[in-house]
Amino acid sequence: MKKIISKIFLLAAFLSFGCAEDYLDTIPTDAVSEGLVFTTTQNARTALNGIHRAMFIRWDSQGQPGEGGVMIVRDVMAEDLVMTTQGNGWFVSYSRWLRHNDETNGDVRFVWRFYYRIIGNANMIIANIDDAEGPQADKDEIKGQALAYRAWAHWNLVQLFAERFDAGGANSQLGVPIVTEPITEGQARNTVAEVYTQVNADIDAAIALLGTSRAAKSHLNINVARGIKARIALTQGNYTVAAQQASLARDGYPLMSQTQLYDGFNNVDNPEWIWGSRQQDDQQTFFASFFAYLSVNFSSTNIRGNPKAINSLLYDQISDTDARKGLWDPNASDPAMRDPFIDEITASNFSKIDYMNRKFIAQGGASSVGDVPYMRAAEMYLT
Image 1 (tube, rainbow, N blue to C red):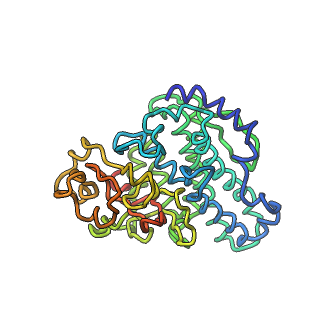
Image 2: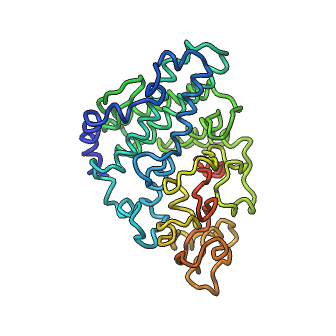
Image 3: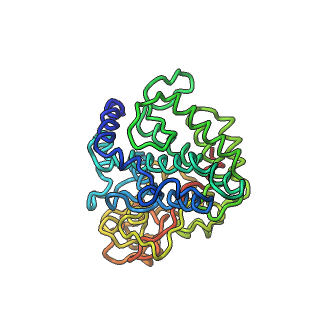
């Protein structure tokens, strides 16, 4: 971690001069003028939809499927997810802690660029929405979502590219650049304290503007914003605020049933999901998909040869009465003891390794389509 912190300035400088107009570019201005895009709230909503879609599209490589790709990076660098073999190599270097401290690596740059692209688009909306023609309620909703995205993206960046927030400290250590205007050049790094001040200001403003209604769960409403606020408060050690916001965030989102628990974590219509991306059948991203790496059944070289498993030490701590324990099979290598569902959903050429997961299920062996979960009510109960 210290190595990546010491090199983050070099990474920022490299991006500033090498691809600043790329990582801070904005979707609307790629083709038309800023003024034309934001003449009406309807047009502004189209720009906002670009952010929603950026959450799960392929970036520079198949291992960069938007937020799903960053989620995989976080998981493989932690202790609970196990790479059972090297497979075809995807995410293995991350799992061995050999990639995250290389500022020239494309996957490291992807994480930086991804969140700053979200911020860049959000800034364009925030800077222009007040002058757009349309109902004030629409302006508030669009601006609220953009503010929530900006808070969420800065918060992710400061966790990944800075030393952690110390609840009892000054937090004067360098964090990441705060970007609140639609610019295309890099900025100097702010302190961790300054980043969290901005993040909290943005998420509080978003909560004040948003309501419960929204067009789809891929959009951000007040429940999502409160969930983000709870996450921020948790990382700052503000446990009372975290608990309060988490309780409000999960309001109206009941826990899933046991049947739904085993449905594959691939359907945004699950009542427990507060926020997630719906992937349409005609939006097939093949190997650039969360489910192309973590599902049990998508027929990719990565899945067939490297089924993802739970750490056995963690598995053993789960109570036998906890239905979640059934999401992994400790006897998968033994045909006589293996969960028959694994054989039903996979072909004979799939490796079967003890403690492998059956939690994530893709649309099929030839389709990596699946809705991607970003926030669930269960998380808010545990906050």
